[in-house]
Image 1 (cartoon, rainbow, N blue to C red):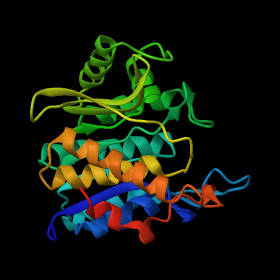
Image 2: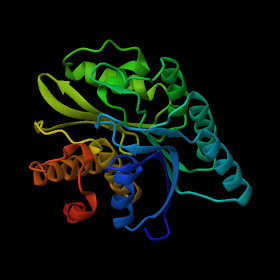
Image 3: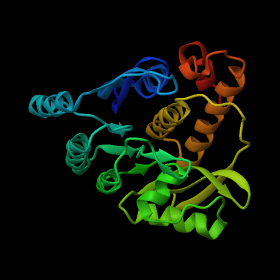
Length: 274
């Protein structure tokens, strides 16, 4: 893995462990060569009452142009939170070009949760994310995002047949493999998906832990990307990402300031367990 180069495209938070701040320690610990492209500079996690977001669209545009001119190559690209419509177009075009060269593309289409778009995210983002998914080897939306992307009604729970139909609807957008988090299937919390390499659907149930930390989705994505790039099957990688997040939450459930996210660097031993 020491020669496997990953590009992480996500926002960078100054105070708190979310987005790049959560992903970098995990994937560096796994032994990957990590490069990053901040889609925004954020003062602190959005769970605090005040924060500042600095738009980096022009930085993204110039950086990608220079990197392509210099011939920089990546084995995989992982995209997360993208701030502006223009930035989404720039990154989507870049990912499409790289996918044609064989670079693996992981897309977490961060747009919303709990049945709606995040505050400040325009409806037009849905269409732009659909375009990005056209080149995705792995799409990792939550249930709300999967429904928004596929024009599927958002309900409190779904049946196994509806779960498979939702996975297939995301696949029809172009994604080869799909992992949908935060689904409720027949009353059970579950992660559902399809592995295009194995040609198999899967459903992995889990118990909801009544403790909230921001950044757990980013940690999940980091472990998933790392395991898949190490040759694990998607179902096994997904299961291990779920384990890591659950153990991190349980270990730090008594942390007073949960808005800062999980103390990733102090708990990297969790990543080593299987």
